[in-house]
Length: 405
Image 1 (cartoon, rainbow, N blue to C red):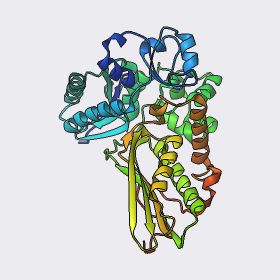
Image 2 (cartoon, rainbow, N blue to C red):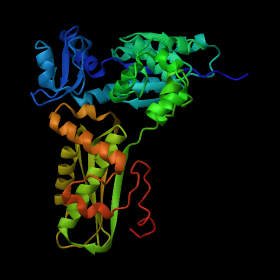
Image 3 (cartoon, rainbow, N blue to C red):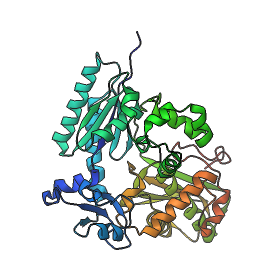
């Protein structure tokens, strides 16, 4: 007899705001905005009270203040948020057999194989209560046979609540909901569906999959399956990666400082993009230099959690300037970002202007579509010959893999 899957999805409600309220109870029940405190800043997170005014994350702070002048602005502290995220992660790790952390405040857990569905739900309830008791943070969860339905159920249950979708009731549960509730349906796809008169998930359920594919391509097939409660994606066991890095060994040792700095800049820029793409933030920068005599030196520096080029690149250059010995030829240079934590780029919005955020989004979108090195700073053009590789896997560039370093 096969065992039905039982997947739990958990989401910490208005996470940044909830953490701030632990430190200041006067914020309870008030509209709260977290992010850049200047008019050029951006909203990183907001309370439910602020959302009632039409405010949302990534909105310019100036516009948010126009919508709700009485809102309380807080710059935010990414280090504090990461600490509480780790507290929740440890509780989940101790409780469930398999879990997946998808962001700083969102998790999946596989509870399949327990005696009965009721026991799974009881276990989920007890886990939620323990997280609330030990951290003081509100958290919601959804429980069903797969990731998609559980995630939607969490959204329906919020704020600070829970929901179970029984086996066999997935389609009726999803049917009356807006198509915007389907995971991975963005604003553009939503508008496309709305323009076709498709506003409820029920309509997608009644459509032939071929029609969805014709309108939205392969993405249409995926949306159709999700709308029908079909999702076989597994909970991927969470393993915390501690660092990403890249190095370059030169064919000929060099003393060309312009070339060295250009390559370091390109390395740092690419690793920062990899951080953002992997929803990671770094709190430590390390630069490595190996000279022609094979002596190797490294320097590292702690920084606030970030994945922003304009913070990481200057720190890389600063460390290199301290390391570089002008009298010796350089054989190898490298950059490493470590002390990684989960977190989308939004956590860096506390200091950034809207123009900077938009620039990063635009550059990353081009890189995702056309390749990592299709957009880069002019000073880093020297590094275009660096072989592409995934810094998260630790695999060396193919052309350098067999060279002595």
